[in-house]
Length: 270
Ligand SMILES: [Zn+2]
Image (cartoon, rainbow, N blue to C red):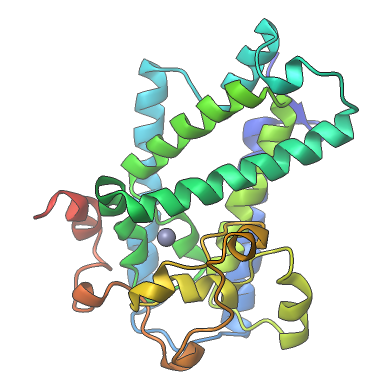
């Protein structure tokens, strides 16, 4: 029987929550924009949605050949009694919290590594090349990076053995959070200050998209903001301010990143 969450199939839950968060963010950033856009929204959205479509196509093809996702890995580990949580007897709520926090640390670590290992940075740069940031930047990831991420999560899930439902909620939360923290959204300062000790806000994550490398190499969090502080790579604000900072890659500020062909082929160029 397919996994259900809140009475709907997990695939519908993921898609529904993703679309709902995207629509809300798209409306809010139109109403309360943080920065002036360099490119028209239509132009960038065409490219970022085309990248998302290529991600769906690539993941569908790969999972036909190798049917592995984080959720499948969780069910597989549970059937065999593999993974830490399948060997200890903890209350479900405690297991869920520990698993959620552990998976968030995994995503943080994976993001850090994609900045440090040259072959991974080649693919992750497609995300950083975006000249503007908005809700659509939250899913602008090269298909190779998406597939790499699926395998990393699946391996971690087999080691950890969390309930499949926790994995679904975690993935939906991280995807929704990515749409939120890339939004070109001017949060009221008091709300930013309230959320920031625990959750990555748009102003916090924007620092990570600065063309200044030392700023790019900070604020790696996708959902919880605690890891950047814990590991000493937290930056409160960009040096040039949110209006003065330049978003994107220093060597690629000319036309290119807003085109689909450029974005998909960028990792393969010398
Ligand atoms: Zn990054």
